[in-house]
Structure formats: C-alpha cells, structure tokens
Image 1 (cartoon, rainbow, N blue to C red):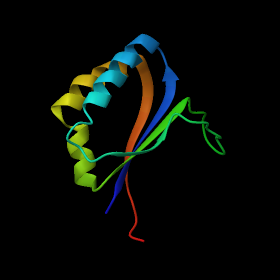
Image 2 (cartoon, rainbow, N blue to C red):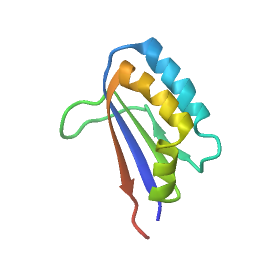
Image 3 (cartoon, rainbow, N blue to C red):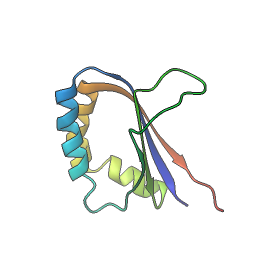
Amino acid sequence: MSAYVVMIREHLRDAAELEVYTAGARAARAGHDITPLAAYGRIDVLEGPPAEGVLINRFPTREAALAWYHSEQYQAALPHRHQAADYRVLIVEGVDA
C-alpha cells in the first residue's frame, strides 16, 4: 500500500540554511522509489493555521518512506531543515482503490 510523506513548512527562519537542506534532501532521494506529487505550489488554507509551503511525496510502502527518512543521507541533511524552518512532517498510508 502506498504511503505519502507530507511536509508542511510553518515558518521559515533561514533561507540560506534551507538551501543547504534542499541540496542534501535531493541527493538523499538516490536509491529510493519516490514520486513527487506536490512541491511548494499555491496553497489555499481552508481550515487551520497557515502554511508557507507543502511537499507531498509518494512511496510504494510505509516501510519505504521510513527507510528514506532514516537513511544516512537524509539524516545528514535534516539538521539543516531544523535550523532553517519549523515543519510538520507526517507519513500517511494510502488506501487500496
């Protein structure tokens, strides 16, 4: 069953640090079956607090999403995101159609 990593940027503090994170996160995609579905496009918040940006990636399974998140390459990039901005990050399992 597919799984989706949803990253919601709530507040940017350091654009330069976010660029460092972005470069590392892109490199961390290598060897992982990731399909980008949405990446920082227009957002219409219908309920809840505002979001500065949203990223949605599809993985073949929840385990694949967790393997990417916990990979050495992504974990090396992660401190830069933590320094750059406040995010909420979720893994959501899909449904069988």
